[in-house]
Amino acid sequence: MDKYGLIGYPLGHSFSIGYFNERFENENIDAKYINFEIPSIDDLPEVLASNPQLKGLNVTIPYKEKVIPFLDSVSPEARAIGAVNVIRVTHKGNKVILRGFNSDVIGFTKSIEPMLEKCHKKALILGTGGASKAVNYGLKSLGLETVFVSRYERPDTIQYESITPDVVKEYNVIVNCTPLGMYPHSDECPKLPYEALDSHNILYDLIYNPDQTLFMKKGLAHGAQVKNGLEMLLLQAFASWEFWNGKE
Image 1: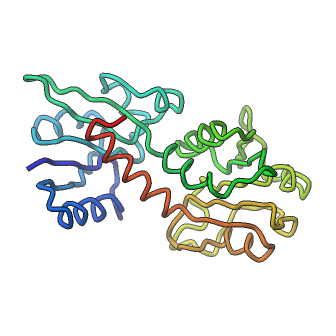
Image 2 (image 1 turned 60 degrees about the horizontal axis):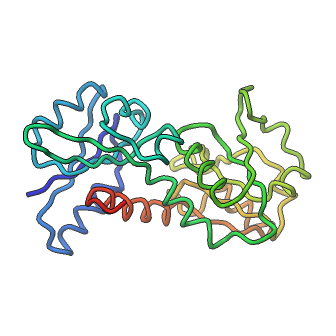
Image 3 (image 1 turned 180 degrees about the vertical axis):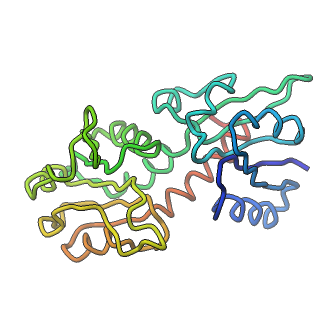
């Protein structure tokens, strides 16, 4: 039986384990998906050694960047983003070959692209973590100018206090890459001049629980288009399967 799995720490609720095991059962695929909760990335070789049937891994917080030195090769997108969240595991004799990919950029780009129109030329990216780098890469590949927004003074970012009504009219695509508004803190949202939004704005939230965040609700109240991160998650899962099975 082939094995696939997820490495991260801690691993609470995981979308992937339910999704893949259900898929394997429904499609009669002789495989199992396992959560590998490892307290250090240095435990990865042990996971590989004790699971010789392993064909692929997903990588989540806090190892998307830390895993890169363990890999034999990394795709151009993952290299440019600086984060890997999918690993293809192949065996050549006694050697294990690890190739890293990034499915965040594929999932996000395919999900937001149908929403974009000619008026959407500039985007605000809320947050500066690993997912925000993939979102930035995806938006630029779709031809948009981007600016990162942070609570802190950082190079090449603006702070929330600088976001005026004029800014959200010019940067009319806003992507939330922060955990603000995620269950159980669903009464929170990024600090923005929501009253300045209109039908030209897109508010995209990487959060999918709750399925309509306060960020999205406030956007809807002013006529903006909104979308949560569930479709992105499903598209990422499809991309993982293709990476594991050698389609690049």
